[in-house]
Amino acid sequence: MKKLLFSALSLAAAVSLNATVFATVNGAPITEAEVAPHIAALGKNPATLSNQEKQMVLARAVDIEILAAEAKKSGVTNLQEYKDALKAAQDRIAIEMYQHQLSKQIKVSDADIAKFYNENKSAFVEPAALLLSNITVEKKAEADAIIKELKNTKADALVSKFEELAVAKSIVPEAKQTKGHLAWVTQEMMPKAFWDASSKLKRGAITQTPIKTDLGYHIVLKEDAKLQKQLSQDEAKPFIENLIKGQQAGAALEQKLQELRKSAKVEVK
Image 1 (cartoon, rainbow, N blue to C red):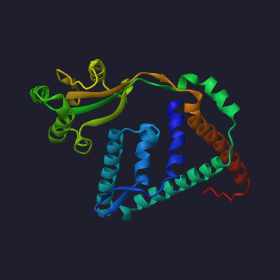
Image 2 (cartoon, rainbow, N blue to C red):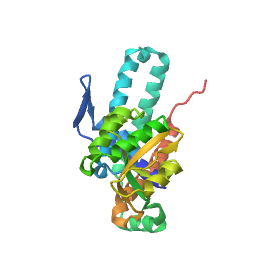
Image 3 (cartoon, helix red, strand yellow):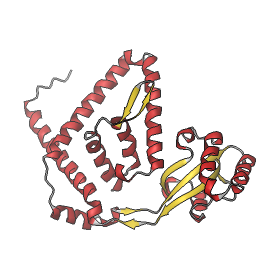
Image 4 (cartoon, rainbow, N blue to C red):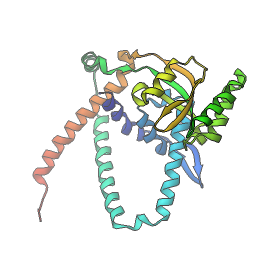
């Protein structure tokens, strides 16, 4: 249910963007239009993103721009497969935009919102979450050395030192842009060993022993934590409103299709 709610917001968010430029890549601007899909993937309101989450989103948009430029340079846009895929994508986007225009005409009453909220209250629970920084390395000895170096760092310099080491030593490519900062993470997003060890840390503390996962050895700094929270009806209202609009617009689109089929000239070859 929650995934559906957040998905319903993505298109609406994308079509309401302005031309703010967050970065440039070889002269090409990275605007809100490029950033929006990555924000939607987080399933969060853009206004509530932490600085670390904003850095991660921007880093991903930059990576996409770099790869897309290289792909176009390689000549793939001249391939018939590309042209066929492009037409299919354009048709899909046109239909999505048409449905979005239909949804804008729909009015959702407070009574409908209250009914949906009360019937689906369990869907509006924000899980417990942690705000972490992470350094990942391949070998335990290297992780042990980093922990030792951080232990010898004064408290007021710990964050900056952690960022420095994340950029220099982490094997995670995004760390060079994010300086090791992760977005808010929930238990279901993390390996059990990683979540369990991070949960036990106090705010501002680092792991005393490396955390082993399939990705390597992790050194974690716990920045903040949030308890599980039941969203109020007012907090859930934007999600509910968009979902109901999406459902009703989908039904209207299906009805329109049934009407158009009657007059469409279809010849099966």
